[in-house]
Image 1: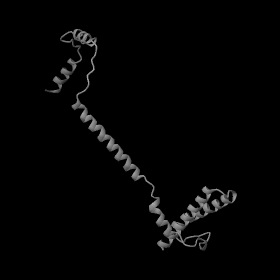
Image 2: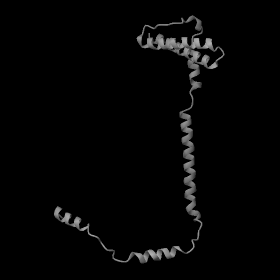
Image 3: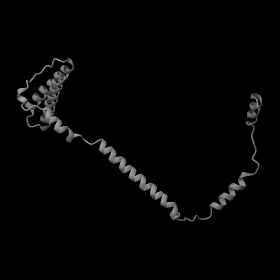
Image 4: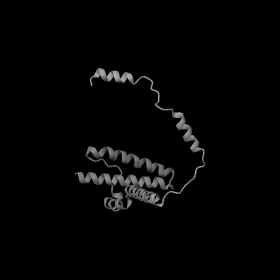
Length: 155
């Protein structure tokens, strides 16, 4: 078949086509059957067993997924605490208030942490009974300690 024959057949499809039989008779017959009352029957027990198994399997998979996500997103506080204790020096008063590392990679972080510590100390002077400010100050001092430890290990 060449392209010319193919195009002629395609143009022939544009013509309206009359059905070979009258469709309204079959539609009326189908509607007449629908007027009879419907009777509901229970499904076979064999057909419900695979559905029950499928539902149970999907619930188990969902529960396993939820446990996996919660395990992945769990807090790591217990594992971090011993490492933090080993990094903190025994006497924090021996560390000078301002510290300028020689390594420029640590210098910017040291300046930022020192400024944050000073701002928190001023805020604590205004609200001395604030546990949130005290926690922030402790966290900032801890980060300074970690930074000093990293600078010491880097040489």
